[in-house]
Length: 268
Length: 334
Image (cartoon, rainbow over all chains, first blue to last red; front, side):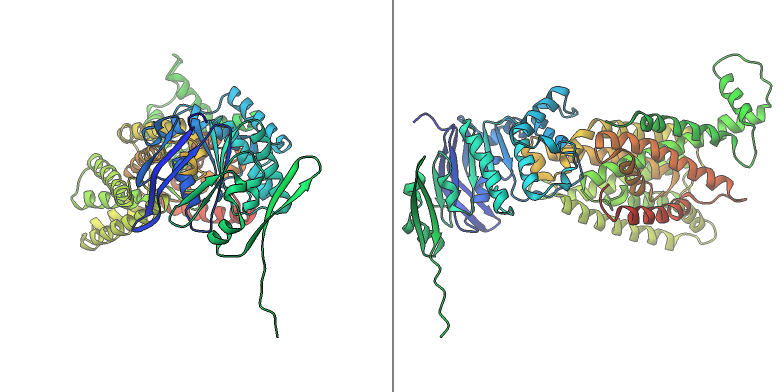
């Protein structure tokens, strides 16, 4: 395999006295979708924010194409790494296209504003996620699913080398989850490198790439999804009984999925 | 993007109000005469007006009107920038304690019987110092979270308010106390060419600074971490906004006392007219703020036999106006 795009080495982070994770090693290769799974509070979102530069590591380093990320300023980093946030609080009712054009900020000077060319790039990004029809609407009026796609378009307008997605399907209903995942899958098809955290182990089977199962404290097992996500590993990580099943699909081979075993006490 | 009609209105309205302000007053001057006097400054025309009228228009009313416009514009644009930065519609220019600190500085100057220029310098310096204190207090882990800024501002404002009360308590109730009280209510009647020289440079510099940052304020309004992930150096940007608004507000308070409500209300009016985009909102706030405070000051100096303090009028007109606005928009940003 070629040299990794992102290398996390010996990463540790703590909020004050409380260590979230330590000694994390992880590589992200160009063109893959790396899915990070793990129970609540294991630190996967924190790890993602450290890679994105929103939080600073206490130990270790994140290297991007062999450059230490902490040596880059916010602008240079934002040209390489874009982050789709899990909790986005809308502020003002800006038009959708203006929100997408904010993805061009890393290419502007400190006193600049998007040019006609930047707006063109923003329109193309909106087109790619199939949301051009709402470009003039105030984005505060969009549904959660639509807003998520608009924010995904903003990360595309950033033209980064890698997109970090922090639980992109959280807060979305069933249909919008599928819609978001389809867009992410379409980007993966085009070779966009992505790192995604998720609560749903099934999502790791969807995309070409590897899965990482994170346990509290930061110990990771990384590999092909079918090796990382097994009955035993999931049951151990989440402390519940889980079965990983597979069905044959006529056109595209095997589809894997997992489900918990529900086992509630019978009333006597 | 913005309708040309609105742009034209934004340019013409302050100028028209300025013209009107020059001929209304206790000493009525004919509008045509004002036009002649103004024209006479640039082209040689026969001087068919009394010298006393020219003095009233050019030496008294014009500096006062210009000061009103710059103070109104500056406070409004500062309020708009702060509301974007703090993502909060209730934020005004005094959120970081500049007004309370300046007010205390002015009270000290009045206690010490300093002249007008010294008072303005002391009030301005205290305003800057107050915000500097807030900023230092809010600094944690090499960053200044917005919540920390707001809370530190509350602390610093409360502290300087207490000092101000102390200054009032020790002030001579026959002479000093009324002077302090009257000064705090705000007034433009001390406006002169000198106070223009004192107040305009910081107000202009601060306003230009904010206008330069107006796109970045849009991005900053997404929140600190998100703005950072989009490549904004948030600490520099927030620092820049704070410096600019503090220059403006401290200069405004130091020449005309405490004029509340302009920085709170005008940005909302601006958003109704041109939308939330700070690229349009900041210039609009400048224009509306200038017009608004000039109108208020015209009322202040003409409505009754003695002048009505500005702070009373801006609150008496601003509060009901804001109430109507709140009902109309039901608290949403538009």
